[in-house]
Length: 160
Figure 1 (tube, one colour):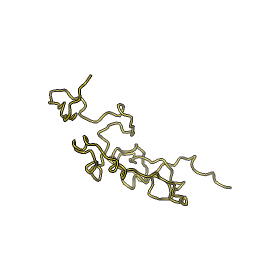
Figure 2 (cartoon, rainbow, N blue to C red):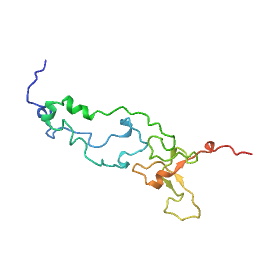
Figure 3 (cartoon, rainbow, N blue to C red):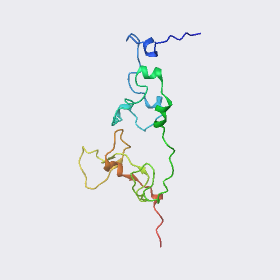
Figure 4 (cartoon, one colour):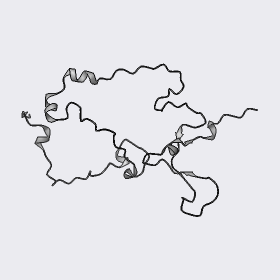
């Protein structure tokens, strides 16, 4: 049976002194995670920092607040109401978009980086031909994000 010692927090009990070997000094490899973004090297992925620090103004940031706990009056204003259907007109009401209308000719699957057949370093040929080499790990520019893949089966049959 363990005894509870008042006044001692979990961080006060064990502090590593640096003598232990730490093998987890970097990010996990894709095969060790459940989040597959399709990028072979983890360090090739870009990082976008948050626009504001998280948790600085929250209750429970300090050890004293953690020990005291949160009151019901502090917790209730943070509760979020249930989301209700807005009952829109169907034009631009698609979730996860900026309100743009859906275009059936644009396709739904985003393409990756387009690279010229000569990879931009060899003799240049006339024409605008590119090959999809997959989505880059960093953030795509607006122009790259606008390019979508449309398969031949997505096109309607021509009317005669």
